[in-house]
Length: 253
Ligand SMILES: Nc1ncnc2c1ncn2[C@@H]1O[C@H](COP(=O)(O)OP(=O)(O)OP(=O)(O)O)[C@@H](O)[C@H]1O
Ligand SMILES: [Mg+2]
Image (tube, rainbow, N blue to C red; front, top):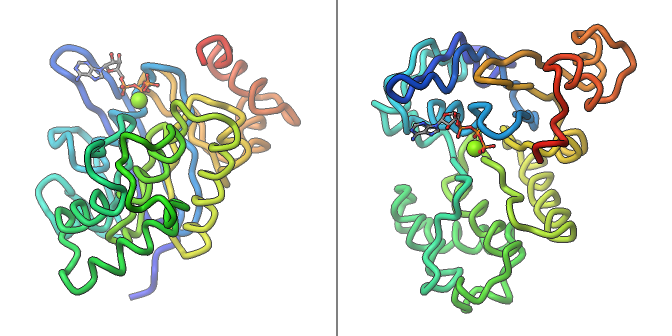
C-alpha cells in the first residue's frame, strides 16, 4: 500500500461537555512530516480537539482517519500508541529524578523492558538534561520541566506528537531551546501538531497553521494562504486573524 501524504484527517469533529459545545465543527488535515500549528484564543476548543484526537474524550462526533485508515484511539491501544500527547498541564513527578520519570513513563507507555534504558537516554538527550538526569524534577526550572514533559510524550517514538501549549511558563531562551528540540524531532521524521495562542510562535515554528475560533476551524494553510482565505492577500498572520474573526488574538494572550 502506498503511504498517504496526509497522516491525520479530521472531518467534522464535534464535542460537547454536557450542554456546552466546545468544538462545533473541526475539519483539518495534517501532512506527514509537517509541524502543524493549532492557533486560537483561550477557550477556542484547542485542548478539546487535541483530547478527542488523542482518545481521551471518546464520545465525539465526526470522523478521524490515520494513515489512510479509520481511527478510534479511545477504543484501541495499538492506535493510541501511534500518538504521543504532551499535555498543557505538566504531568511529572516532582519528587522523582528526570531519569526516573522517563523510566516510569516508558514502562507505562508499554516500551519493552529491553528498550527502556535506550528510550530514557534518548529522552534525556532530546530534553538537554543528560547532566541533570539525577536531580529531582522539583529542582528543575520551568523550561527544563517543559522539555522533560515533551520527552515523556515522545518516549515510545510515536508517529504523531500532539503538543498542547508547550511553552506555558517558559522564558524566551527556554522557548528557543524547546523549538530546537521540536526541529530535531521533525528532522527524525516526527509529525507534530503544535497548539498555541501565541501568533509569533506558530508563525515561526509551523509549516502550516489551523485557525480555531469559538469551536470552529475557520482556516488552514501557510500565512500567505490564510491571508488569501481572509480576503487580505499579502497580510501578515495577525491581520489575517483579525479579518477572519473580527478580533485580535494579541488582546487575549
Ligand atoms: N471539562 C470541561 N467541562 C466543561 N467545559 C469545559 C471543559 N473543558 C473545557 N471546557 C469548555 O470548553 C471550551 C473549550 O475549552 P478548551 O480547553 O478546549 O479551549 P482551549 O482553546 O484549549 O483554551 P486555552 O487556550 O485556555 O487552553 C471552553 O468554553 C471551556 O470552558
Ligand atoms: Mg487549552
